[in-house]
Length: 580
Ligand code: PEP
Ligand code: MG
Image 1 (cartoon, helix red, strand yellow):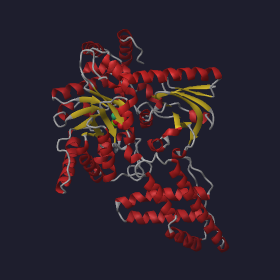
Image 2 (cartoon, rainbow, N blue to C red):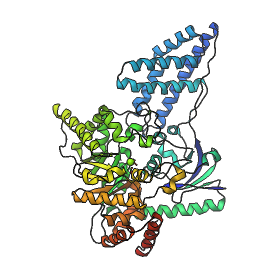
Image 3 (cartoon, helix red, strand yellow):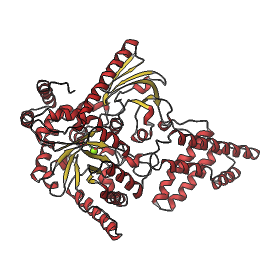
Image 4 (cartoon, rainbow, N blue to C red):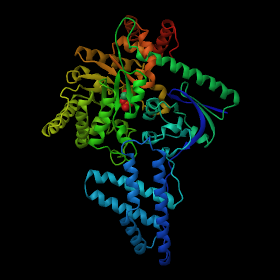
């Protein structure tokens, strides 16, 4: 038995067999063939195409019923491309002219076809080059008897162990087959952690070297509540965890009783308690956990689906479905926040020395008005189906707000010219997640309808700690006096201008932070749906005056350790239940 300690990334307890997930780079052999071998090489190609087609048909069968928008069409298009007579013809003449092995010829043919697509300068056709690569990789894997692991093809329940899991791996995985996640890298606010929480999969990240230690099929326990992973547990530990799991599940079920009660403090202040979502499928969980609405829909996840680049119509359908299913509750959709660890092949995979400080979010959108406007039109069109709010991410100053509004107005004008209906009065707000924005909230508040504080990035940029770096995770501190001052300033400046201030970073779901945020006057909290009942219970037990007194005291303190010790002690005395 070996015990690993990491970062609690998503609560819950799971036990099962490990599946060690690694993407493997294949190298393509190149060798000469004789004229009489051409026919045999061509047969190898045709056989590989047949097997690859069978493989795709199988994927379709496996995920049937769980199919996301466009997935069916994508898989069908791969089958068509693989079996295209023109491709066969090109391979045949390549073999005859070059007399090289078929793997090598396939690569040349595909790269040639991609180069042709690129010449067209048509964005849609350019995007198809990814599909060509994907499709040819399937054939290559068959030719070389190589099986590239994919989390979309899991066919038994497993605990995933990996060095790092990219959001694109996680979004494509078969959620019904993943019982838990353990990775070497990543922090509590990395996007893999966020996704695990939203899918309600227990996860422990930042385990440093677990992926080197664990083998496929090892017995493994994930305790997302304490950040512990146990490999090859002994009988006693295993049965102890079974009991803890039952207790935890009961605790969660009890909390759900709070569903129908409002998030109201003891002295009657109503707080808006909303959910963060990454994909439209999460709406059921939002409703089940009693959220007042969606405070953050991370729309970029629509783009992170494997090989997906949603057009205006597909986005419109996704937004409309969320708005309709939430029946008049507010839905805050954040415009694309791509960049950092959220990369989409063919869109933003340029090499940058500092991607976290780089071409992200609103910066990306303002430099690609075509993509930005497509999303804005889809949002505007969907706005008539519910209570939509639009939010711009990673705003660093007033110019970006003004520039975003210009493009927003252009999108409106385009729809108006075509006589397409939309809501003229959608509240438009910004995320406060860069220190320069937080300290200029007095200026920004005059331009927007609301603020939402993104503490995941605000902490990262204030303390200069990469939120995904497990080595310096100890410095990533929401209670750093510098962070608390920026939050307080944002709330004060928002209120002075009469606009509501919310928080959609993970700090909003930290039970230790609730009393501080209530004391500072935060109006809205948005978090993973699973965290809502626990935070609601705390809000319902707090008196605003007491919370204000706590804030008065902690704002005099010098360090995060002093502040967290004080808050923990205060909570132990104040509540008659365990909150953390
Ligand atoms: C944040 O930065 O707090 C936030 C909510 O945005 P994201 O986690 O998607 O960067
Ligand atoms: Mg952010």
